[in-house]
Amino acid sequence: MRAVIFDIDGTLLDSVDLHARAWVEAFAHFGVETDEAKVRSQIGKGGDELMPEFLPAERIEREGKEIEGFRSDLFKKKYLPEVRPFPAVRPLFERLHEAGLKIALASSGKGPEVERYQEILGIADLVDVATSSDDADRSKPHPDIFEAAVKKLEGLGKDDMIVVGDTPYDAEAASKAGLRTVGLLCGGFPEADLSAAGCIAIYRDPQDLLDGFESSPLAKG
Image (tube, rainbow, N blue to C red):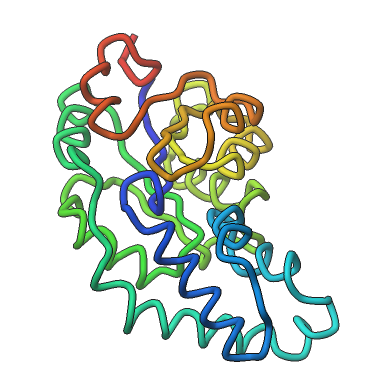
């Protein structure tokens, strides 16, 4: 193993519930009633893949950009200040660097959001590559974001890389990109869902992954 590609929301940051609330509030602003649990089950996808679960195609065509823009501004102003890292993210990244592994981030968020997340996590100096929705035509569960990360990790083959994510959409997208996935439960998805999506190993959170690093798929062989 020579590189690890991390999802961010729900994997490194405790932000899934906050994203769900922002979407529910944004939909309500535009007169669309939604169930928070159902919205939460879609977090991990980008807006282009999430909105079709709740809106007809013609309304997305007409108002999709406005709704997503409202949601993005709402999240930044109201919910982003509440976002916190999961335990041991920086120590895990430091351990990966000690092992000689490169670290990439692959998020469905926009570029400025990914930069802000790195500040919140305190890991900017440890990240080798970062990709966002700005690097992809389609969001997860499409493979575009992971394929962009692979491209930026120049000189490394896909067999040298592994993805760490918290949703079935991460595992599905990674599989389409020819990558394996380690799942984390801290994003709230059931272990059975992560296993069914193809995760080759599952850990509780970054701390658990760090504690079991030597026997994990991330350990350098």
